Image 1 (cartoon, rainbow, N blue to C red):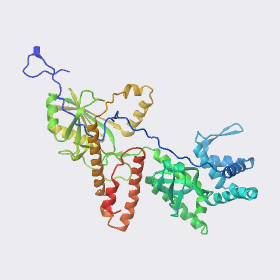
Image 2 (image 1 turned 30 degrees about the vertical axis):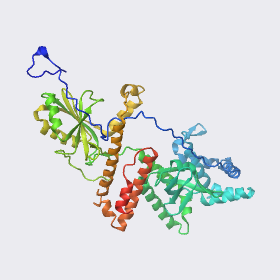
Image 3 (image 1 turned 60 degrees about the vertical axis):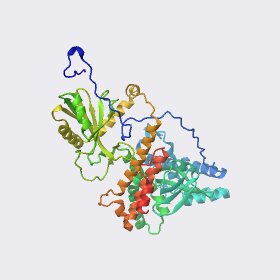
Image 4 (image 1 turned 120 degrees about the horizontal axis):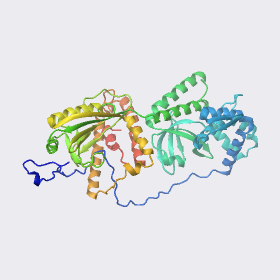
Length: 516
């Protein structure tokens, strides 16, 4: 589209383009990800491997497996396998039964430990007790000692990870007894994260604590749920068996704890509700306008409005159009909803540079020659943005239509595109130019500033009871709750560091401010 300057003859027409303002090279919390071409130093960490099992341990394990998987316990094995793995794990073809693992060898390892040590036969016995009675007298002295340790310690326990030393081991605490266990399980030490919850079997073998079978790792966010289930089961068990101890409970209710953890994992896979900072459901909302006047006048009005910040020419969905960020400043406002019980908060911010204030981003505005498009993440933001544009631009724009797409629908649609073999080539092929070192340094400074601002903002943010962390730190009850919240933050910090990312907040500032 070509525009004519007023007062010029048609024979001397010149093409007028929108002014190419210098784009601020600052972090906006969204948009395209850039990569540097600077070579990274090679890193090849030496990973220790678990020590090999001794001859006696291997021999004992083989003898237990041969005993438990004999024809004597065949019917019990099929029944237990279906109970543990689910009805779909066994299919019948005529008189034959076929067991399916779905290539999940880890789950089978967990099943073996449960079947050998916890599963109760029709006679009321457990396989490992029968093995001890019938085969135990034939074992060598070292194997007999190992068996006694396994009988005493092989329990599926609910543990909280207190610390992890990669290549060395981990310190765990039993959430029901408070017992501290120092384990030397090297495999777990490489993927375990502090304060994660681990439903697993710690066993003592030849003086060394390690895990056996398989376990289920939960996050500290899921701790209240699994702990509530475990406490209810434990309280009921104590009423029925007043003389029994906690290890008896773990043995008798290992399957119940396993199923509870599995339900948490299933619930984790469900899409979580996503909300804006104003607590409104996230919806991909778009308002489309037609320009009624000169687009250069619209551009000038937007440049003068403090609510909109020019960030450059859009390179993706609106090529050759100017992109602005709609910021929460000036006349911008969005009504807030009530507090949430469940859900994730989507947030984004923009700053002009180091030492400058940061502002919440409310949406994106795209100015083209003939139209204007406002894109937001909620209906409420879109409505507020439309009202603001009418104040700023007046009759220069004419509303054409609104478009809405649910968050889950968008995710499913993008997943469908991702499954298309040609999608990457047709839709994601872009030339990524490396950024200069000055920009990278500036972005790093801005990132550190924002982390500190988020941290101090958290210290003064009210919870559902209307208390801030600073206020909670004034009472013993509040400090106890704060320590649990610090576990969540430390878990997120350790997880970020493991993946090579910056932690979301400065925990040293929080500890210093709250005296924790």
